[in-house]
Image 1: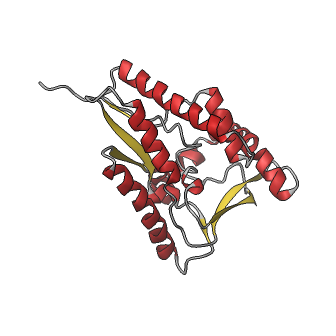
Image 2: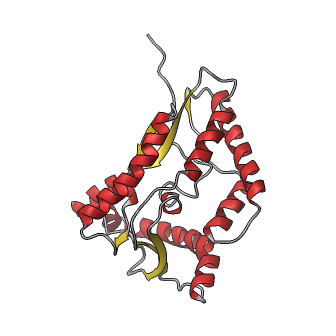
Image 3: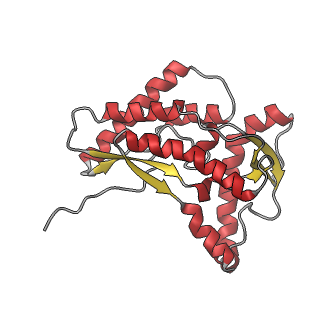
Length: 235
C-alpha cells in the first residue's frame, strides 16, 4: 500500500511580530517596509520548516502574507473601497438555519467577532470618518470601479515560499486562494449587472490562480462561504 499524503487547509498561526505589521497595514498606518519584508520571509521559512518537521507532505506558506483568507484580495485588486455600514441585528451574516436554531451560541460568537473586528479597524475608521464606529457598525467593501489584479504581493509570496523550500526538493507545496463565491460578498456600484460583476471578479482571480499554477505550486481554492450560502438558501 502506498503512502497517504498529508496536508492541511492552509492558514496557520502568524507570529506576533508579523501580526503587528499586518494590523498596521489594515489600519492604514505607515511602517518599515524593509523590516516587514524580512519578518515575513522569516515567518514563511519558520512555518515551512515546522510543517516539514511534522511530516507534512504538501506544505504551504501558512498564508503569512495575508491579513485574512478573504480580505487579502481586497488589498490586491483595484475598484474596491471600504465603508462603515450599520449592522441590523447581531451580525452582518445572513440568518442561516444553524444560526436560527442556536441563537445563544451565535450571539456569543458574534460578540467575539465584533470585538476583534472593531479592534482591527478602529484606527482606520477613526482616520477616515473622524469618529470611532458604533457598536452596531462594521466595514462594508463596495465595488466602485473596474476590478483589476495587482500581482506584486502574490509574486512576493511565491518568492518567499520558494526560498523557504530551498534544500527540500522532495517536498511539494500549495498556495490557498479565495474562491469567487466567497470573495464576491461585496456591494456592486460599478458593473451593469451582478453577473457582469461576478465575472469581473472571476477574471481578476484567474490571474492569481494562473500565476500560482505557472509557478509550479498546487492551487487550493477555498470556498468556505459556499456552505453558508447553501444553508441560508434552505432556511
